[in-house]
Image 1 (cartoon, one colour):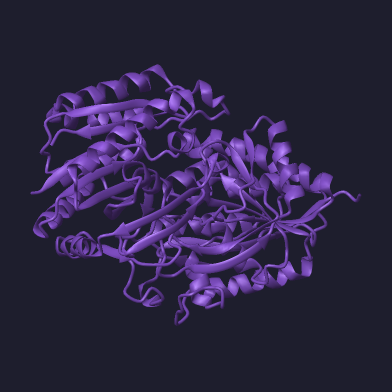
Image 2 (cartoon, each protein chain N blue to C red):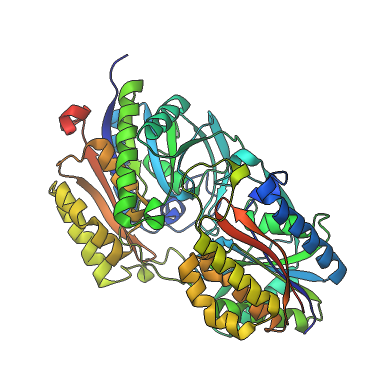
Length: 270
Length: 304
C-alpha cells in the first residue's frame, strides 16, 4: 500500500472564513501545518470523506472530472462564500465503485452539473490544497452506514489506489463533540460547549496522538454517545480503513471550538 | 391595512420523484411517469389553491437544516439550478422565485419576540433547498406567488421531541401574528412526509411502480391512523400521539413543519381534506388541505 499521509480535519467553515477570530486562529494555523505536510507527502490522489456530504441511497462517489462553483453555507452564510475548483481522479473513483459493488456495498457515481458540493469537502480541500494542484476521490457519508461499513468502504478505496500504483493521502472531514450553542454568542468568546465534551475530546485526541489504536477502538462508542460526536466519528473510520490501521501516532496540530462543537486538525504518523 | 389571515394550510410533501414523474420543462431528467396518485392529489390541491388567490405561500422545509435558530429567506429574488444531493438522477431543476421579504422579516421579529433564535438569510447567492423547491413546484408550478421560506432548526433532534415541537408551536404562533399584522392573505405549506422509513436501494428504473409500496405494514398502519384522525378533525388526538408516531414510524413531521402549520392555524378541529396518499421509495406521503377560508375560520380568533 502506498500511503503517503492521513489527516482528520474539521468541516466547519468558521475557522476558514474567519481566520482572524481569536478562538479560531489555532484551527486555521493547524490547517496550514497540515497543508504543508500534505504538500511534502506528494500524494498522487487524496481520498476524502466528508460527513457533510450526506447520502441515503447507495454509497455515492463523485465522478465529474472537474467541479467548479460557489457555495454558500446553509448555516453560516453571513461569513462569506465558498468558491471551489476541484479535480477528480475519475479512474480511481470508478475502481472504487466497481470494487465496492463487487463486495456487495451498493455504490454509484455522480456526474452532474451544479451538483451541490458540501461545505466540509470545500473547506478541507481548499485548506489542505490551497493551490488546487491535487486530485481527489470524494466519497459520501451514507447516513445508514455504520462505523464498520464506513471502514470497509475506505479500505476498498485505499486498496484501489494501491492497485493503480498511486500514492494516496486519506482525509476524514468532520468534527469532534457535536453540541453547538443554541443561542447566538459573540464569536470572540467561542469555546467548547461543556467541560465534559472538552474532557472527552482531549482524551480521544491523546489516544490518537499516542497511537493507542486498541484503546481508541475500545472507547470510541462511549465517546460518540457521551459527546454526541459528529456523525458517529465515521470520519475516523475512513482514516482507519484507508490506512489499513497503519499509523503509529499522530500530531495534533490544533484543537478548538467551532460555535461550541469540538474540532481538531490531526496528522497521523504513517 | 386590513388584518391578515391564513386562508389554508396544506400538508405538502417534497419527494423529488413527483417532479421527475411530471416532466416539467424546468427539470432536466425525463421520466416515463410514475407516482400518479400523488401527482393527481397535487393537481386537486393546485386547483384549490388557485381559487384561494393568496398573496403569499409560506413553506417550512426539513431540507434547509440550520443549527442555530430558525432562518428565513431574506432576499427579494432567488434563482438557480437545484440539484438534489440524494437523487441527482431525478431532480435537476431550474427555478426562480420571489420572496416576500417584508413578511419574512415580520415572522423573524415575532419569533424573536417569543424568545426563539431567528435570523434573516441575506446572501443572494444562497442555494435554496430542494425540499422548498419541490413543494412549491408541486403546489404552484407557475411560480407567480411570492414565498416565505423557513428553515428547519431541527430542534426536536437536539432537544427532546416534545421540547422541539414546543419551539415549533411558538414559531407557528409568531408566523400567524406576522401574517395578521402585515395584512397578508397567506397559505401555509408543511413540507413533510409521514412515515419515513425507506428503501436504501433504487430500482434500475426509478419510476417502475411495480417496485413501489409501503416500506412496512407498521408504517402504513400509522399513516392511516393519523390520516383518519385528521380527516375527522380530531386534532387534539393527533397531537397527543404525535411523539409516539414520530418515534415508531420515524415520521418526518419530527422536523417541525406540521406542528408549525397547525400552531399558526390555531389547531383547528376542522376535518382535513385528503387529496391523496402514496408511497415514494417506501415513505408515506399525504397531500391534505385545511381550508380555513372555506370553513369561515380564516381569522385567527375564529380558529383559536
